[in-house]
Length: 555
Image (cartoon, rainbow, N blue to C red; front, side):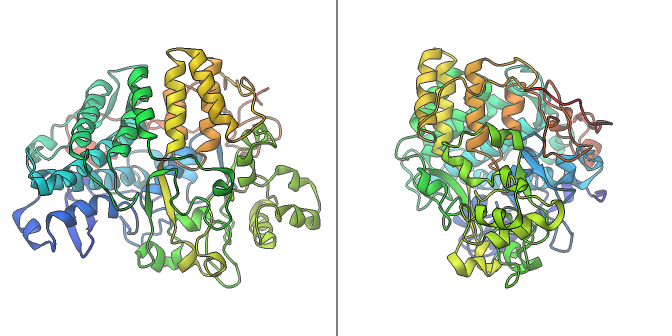
């Protein structure tokens, strides 16, 4: 990873609108100039559209930067999930800094600039809309302001969970990130301290209260824009972190209205699996066929390139997962704790196929894909195994998409699913009355595995920070949302360690580390240019990579 030498206060951010590109400067600068507003076709509505349209599609650093993970919001799913134990890189690749606790996690490197550039750029877009809407928005601006408040709350929620060294439940005084609103001035940015957990989460709830009010009557056209159900979902997430169990249960239940959980057919569908919104998706984002992330670099800088295996290596020749040997796979232990009766197991290749002949492995792969030779060869490139390969995230466009990455990688990606709300409701209810929580959890689990028995997944992961009940909920979340960016948040929230070193582990040698509490590399460093220019902003310590593998953990 190359060092970064430019300041956040001068970094450029491209704000994508429905009809034009408006270049915005200084992501943390909270104001929009009159000229910017006047010169934007469609003005206010274009700024509102930009809040969500800028989540994917373009490069924050430019397509010549060599950063193949520069494709927007979904990239952060992998940054976070790879810091734990449930995801494995098959060898050093584009995501090694996060998986291997690399030197690039230090404040002088681009890995630290990435969240600052992206998230504060997105927050700037929200602040622009709110500055145009005013303190009391007119009727034609209310929905836009509601969208801005909802999305700003979501962005700060992510930042707080990434940067706070301790979660809200453990330390309300732990520092998160600086808060920048539509009224923050340039002079204030130079002395803008990191907000404590208590201040940050109060601010998040305040934004969500306004979003709930302003979006009460808003009818959206698709799931790519938040509505009031998403606000309920965000409130459920927030109150879960705050351990306000009554409110977490309340809003998780409200958020479920109008949605149904994915069934086995939807979850494992070879054509639409996790690439097309369905009845469970509360919010998502989508790549478009004319996005730079799809058209440039042969589509390599995209979610599809990283997560979709079924691209024909002959007709396409592209895709880091399918053709370049940079697969991200499931942790072997997590896979082996999934009963064969759990349909989610079908989204990951059985490790048993690593022990058989090539002919038998190809035959076994037919249960997962119509193209077993593609998947087998992709798995063979560097590590001579196929166990744990994911087929959860499918290419789109049928056979045509599997033969052409410019079609196959134009996928949608979920940001919030109703399944999360059912599990939040269950956990929150159980923390008030365990019997009620167990009943809700069991109902959820049986929708995935009719043979489910409560108490089978009570793994403490090196500590007993949570009860049997919360461990059971956690296991369901780990399996259900693998690859959807929630893993690190849960590890920190539950004060869990990680286990990578155990018998038959598939984690890389010299990266097999076990901890009894959340590892320090999960506390992201703030980019040095921010602390240089913001005199009130402290930093988290640079994480130190463990010097050797841990002794094998005994399950």
